Image (cartoon, rainbow, N blue to C red; front, side):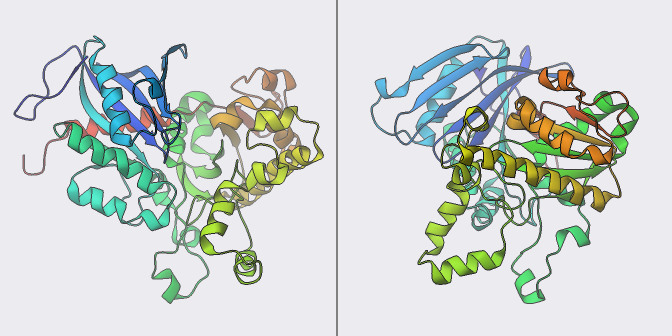
Length: 414
């Protein structure tokens, strides 16, 4: 693959444009490579550099999911790797492949856009600084998102980079949904409901007409159930209510995050349990949720296979929280026409879907056990008053589309 641009800043003519997307963690770097041909964006490869801080490994799969690279980076250079080193290795791997592409744009998933960013943005120094200034709103996510941005700006300054925000899809929330019942002095610090997983919800919203037909413009609740989990109530495919709030800690129970918690409990633990804020933050983000309740694992597959009473309680609590939030979100949008499951657990954990749909039988859902077991697009029986669907999400494709569109847009005044 040829990677670069002409000296004028215009793209070198080629068979197709390549778009590279990143979803960075503190010790990992997930990526996906797409080719844009005519009007379609085609996935080519996806993978990650994992365990940067201890035993880094470079993994790549093709568009069909077949593993084509599994490389122990410690054999190249022992010890921890930095984001810049991992990026340089990835770009070298891409350069070595002749895919008939020129890399046109880089897209980044950024968790928090705050009040400032309500749409994707082409990154310059001022935008990067502004995103980094929001780190206090997402301390475990935002710094990790910025690290590859700055590294790529040094490695490939000719490549346009675009940030896409997980909060942006929820810009359509009205004041009643955005506002917490706090005094103006506290709200002045930017404490409000933002909502997250917006790139996933944006993708699903785009898929709804083809999957749901006329129901797509109705009252739809989407359950993004992965290691991080949230739900979004849509009407006319716009966000009207969501379970996550000021941070990605709120709402549903998650893999290692507690979800909704009485703020009085936080005050109690800080005052009377001898726990400082840093320790409590770690416990709430990394040692709670499925892992904390089960004492076994954050992986739903492990918990479903376990005979441990604690594992069973964790699964029961996880499903119970989903069911409760469906009722709350349905009330917020005046009813329910369809429920959509997506993301890792939503797409693959049939027992979780079954428990949720069966518990919502009073709403008119009737599970089709066979369809659910095979992850059929519709998992409810034909006579159901409210139908449930399984729709795979693709956040990377959303980031790639935005990155390509902004990279091609004329510069201001141009």
